[in-house]
Amino acid sequence: MKKTIAALLSAAMLVALAAGCESKKEETESSTDATSAAVTDVTVATKDDASGKTFTVGFDAEFPPYGYQDDNGEYVGFDLDLAAEVCKRNGWELVKKPIDWDSKDLELGSGTIDCIWNGFTINGREDDYTWTEAYVDNSQVFVVAADSGIAKPADLAGKTVVVQADSSALAALTDEEDNDENLALAATFGELMEVADYNTAFMNLEAGAADAVAMDIGVAKYQIESRGDKFVILDDVLAAEEYGVGFKKGNTELRDTVQKTLNEMAEDGTFMKIAKEWKLEDSVVLGK
Image 1 (cartoon, rainbow, N blue to C red):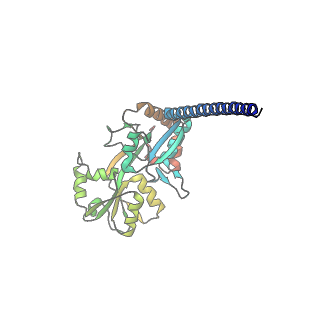
Image 2 (tube, rainbow, N blue to C red; image 1 turned 135 degrees about the vertical axis):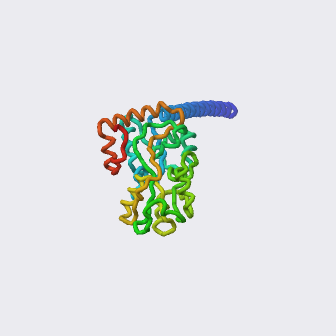
Image 3 (spheres, rainbow, N blue to C red; image 1 turned 30 degrees about the vertical axis):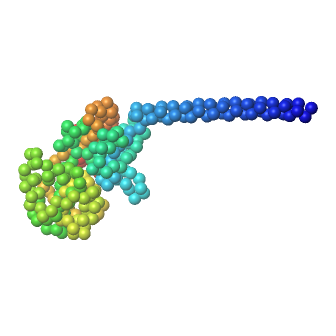
């Protein structure tokens, strides 16, 4: 009798164990299915992002008024406002991505950003990117202390001139192609100093470590206005240039969409409204 009961109990335990294993198998299969579904969802989301629902703008966060970080830690600027309006009209999500300006080509080539939009000079780079039309007429100028006694570029002989690394001002002073006059001028400087950004350049100017800053006129006006009447812009222009939005070479589809939207903004007055908010209306060329 005891043997019979023991046998029955053993059988019952085997049945329960088998049922438990089957239950675990079902849970595992269910979990695997859910995981597969989640992976599929992530893949779809990534494809959606790549199709244009996000628009990632690469910019120099030290380049006011075109793009910079304000006192609240927010990324703001004329170009970022333009990009935001373009995204709004196309139903895109704007992603503002501050970049090291020296690494802009690597960022664009790797697909980390969709475009370079931050006071980006077309001149001399025409064949390196796929460009929108020029939207701002900009020039390279010299900024000096108001009491420096420097009145013209020739007065910079023997002086220290600061430029941002990989900037249009640097190119204007060092590019050997059809640039003999500027090369001759730069040869008279005591030193041509490269710095990472224009805030640093102005710190050097204020401290007396430099005598002049060569830079974009739009940025120069912004910096001078924010710092009082301590600095002036020399009348002689170092180089004339225009700004555009730069896309990876061959990316005409995205460029065309952005250009079409910018043209619409120019036609309905939105472009000029944004320019006036940043006191850049005199520099606008799009739609004129």
